[in-house]
Image 1 (tube, rainbow, N blue to C red):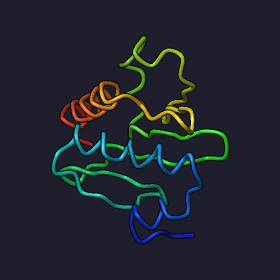
Image 2 (cartoon, rainbow, N blue to C red):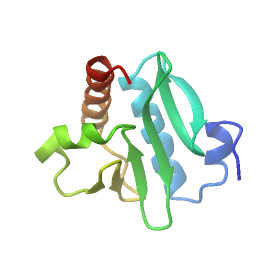
Image 3 (cartoon, rainbow, N blue to C red):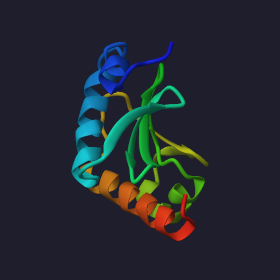
Length: 119
């Protein structure tokens, strides 16, 4: 189902996922002041300068953070040890939001990626 905005998406998410994603959303905004919210690929996404910087979503058994570039997670190494990852997602427990420090690092790494690669 297509969503009009992030609030529309979150309204469909059950607890504890919803509360966890609300905290994550605030932490992304703290790390990325002035970000524009939208829905991209049917997931909540925050953009800056037209570039997707961070996305998130709820799944049955976990929540996911999407760094919007496969290069981001490769650069974080030990900082994401203990999390389940794939090239484009970082999975975390549905009742434990990512720390502000990790969100800040993910956002900064993605911004550097955009500056470096231009996308």
